[in-house]
Length: 188
Image 1 (cartoon, rainbow, N blue to C red):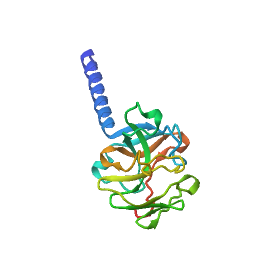
Image 2: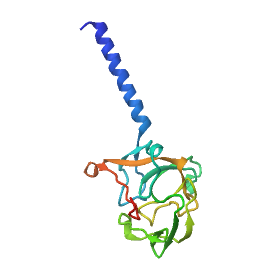
Image 3: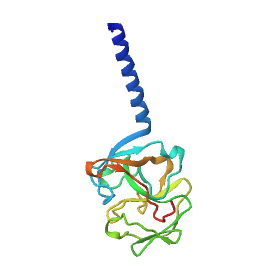
Image 4: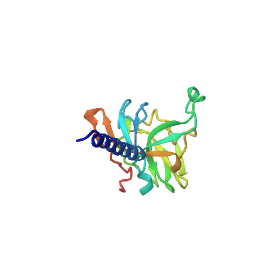
């Protein structure tokens, strides 16, 4: 092989690798869990992959675990910071009626089946809240510490704020695998 042919092969390989990298970046984003609000489903330092294009081909659904941008400071230490990425589970879709009473979540007057929540208890009271159009009611799985749609500081998540759906856990290796949605009403 001549030097010219060898150089052309190298250039071709680099261009193909660059194109693949650009495609991957357009469809997939990595994220690391930094808080305890999704325990026991996800723990601090879990390394996850997000599908950035999921909701271009389908609508967000109850039970999906999503990452979204929150533009509201969550506490006094966040006041000088810009947006923060949060990871939560979609509990209610547009038009759903949400109630939280006696430690349980009700969606459209049906008690939610949520074996994934920590302590089996949802703190707070919500009465007859209807999820607005193009918005989603989201909660962390660790309901006693999660700042989520139950709080005025977060509220419902607009579709435009959703970065993507969590679809793979890469680390820790013993928990590696696909992340499946689990509709709390069992309708999927």
